[in-house]
Image (cartoon, rainbow, N blue to C red):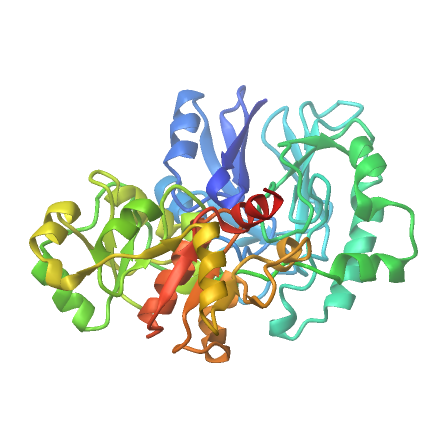
Length: 459
């Protein structure tokens, strides 16, 4: 058996290549949209990717099933309960077995996170007494289970899905031998669960012993446990869930966006394009194009872009030289495809045109304390998620997670001196730039975030 796990850390995504070296037959499971890595590994091991299997319709990224099918001729497969797909696919039913050679894949319907969710049991040898492992998709994570509330907006009840999830876990997964390896679709940082581990694999036995959601409890208690206090889902999830059901243009992994001179960028901006500055927040603060939004490539770039960017809007990129293609691909991983160009030589362009550039205000914790002491109304905006703010906030802060900031701007006073903060200072630069583009007159962000504020208070 050829088995490869791929870890796309910036989206907390695990995907898989499973093949039989004797026959050369292989499948890819839950692929990211840029598929060059799977193709390279398949070629290196003389494998033919003949099928792409999606464990469910994903909401947190745009999957690469269409890209792989176009480049390999692979069949696309989903669980048989899937609905609303407008491209050719072959359904997989509970109990179906795909024989790759000596390697065998067994499908198990495991609804709950979504109605069509499946898990895939892997047998390294057809006559093995125990399976090698199970690809659990978003049904079972390491330390958690898939959240059942993401489809409520589509008219599905979270409690009903949670009940389905309980049955799936206890009748379809926990019936596997304890030694069975568990390979989920996501790890720590994903918004598809609440308590995901940083580990890349586990076993059924370890999860049975340590996973809070698998502890013995009544079904009603399980429903309550897995539906309460889930993190705010990123704003782009509904967009991606819909787009993953449709035919769409394929991702170009090879060509960077067109290079634009400053005058062209300004013309596009005037026509409604968003300037997305993907440089480090410190460099952005030192000088950037007015009304640009800052999301640094050093963090969860695509996820936060999906939180604050309208997917129907054209985008002009500003990056460090040589990183334009990376930025476009990472946006493409969540379906933000409307990148129309990138600014040539941003530092030189900004230096030569100070009338169209701006600097950002970034306050230390001491400076923020001083400002609060001397100004009547400083509006604090905490853009962390609920799980983070539960451990403490700065007194008087408005709690507005970044994923809800653009939708809740009307709750804030654009005329008040405003300071945005997060945990360490990365998301707050994004939030501050969004507030500036929305017309807030006096905006700063807190260097070092809440961590710096707490550290100061302890001195």
